[in-house]
Length: 364
Image (cartoon, rainbow, N blue to C red; front, top):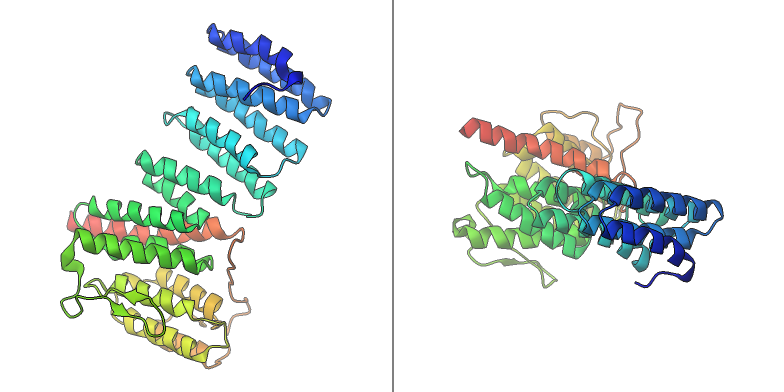
């Protein structure tokens, strides 16, 4: 990208110093020039100086100085009131790519960039494209935990497919072997809690396809072929893992929900939860039951149960048929794209991680 005419003088003084190994001097000079431009409200010139200087410093193997200028660039974006566009996002992804995976520089830059996009874009949890970019980057580097949060926050179809691929690989690498359903919960529940049916359906469909292809014994001997869903082109693959079966049915049931208007869908949800939670295991644990109650409120307008009793089916039936709650707190309602998304993802992942860890310690 050729320098803007007004930034030529500054860049002519900065870039040769980087090329000659004077990184510290170049870094200080870039900050000085940029600060002057900001004070005179020449934001675009400051942005050009900071971007090009940061890029060359990162290319020269100076992640600390380069990341500092990239952080300054984000401050200038905010001062200018810059919106999230392909150009402004593209500058950031270039710098993120050059930062490298060593140390914490890349994560620091990504985190600050996400915060800026949350303020300057339409999505209060941060730009979906940037989340997907970061998630894919961390996935390719094997940083699955970091990738997971970004792919959940992105909420795109492509993000859901990539998350399914990553979690299936994570499951395959688990030692000793664990239930694939534990990993499926990590993708399906956060997407549902954010009201994202498309992502949850894309995720669970792709995940089930991947894990059953890897381990054919997961296919139920009672139903080798997928079962068609009535009045649609959809289908469900019955497996020997009851969590996978539950999640496939849960997503399709939520897809039919119309709040409190569709009584059949409400009743189907209650029956589904009653059937599978009565089996015990991970689905019946308090944290998972709490998230399922949140989903019931969000999609089916079923009030929160009075308490997390030992009989979740009875509690949900009681809520469905109008028994008054004893607490004064209102139901927790999560809508798509709210600022609650990150905390939702974290709480679900934390709850399910306990199950994964318990499995590993039990079998060790």
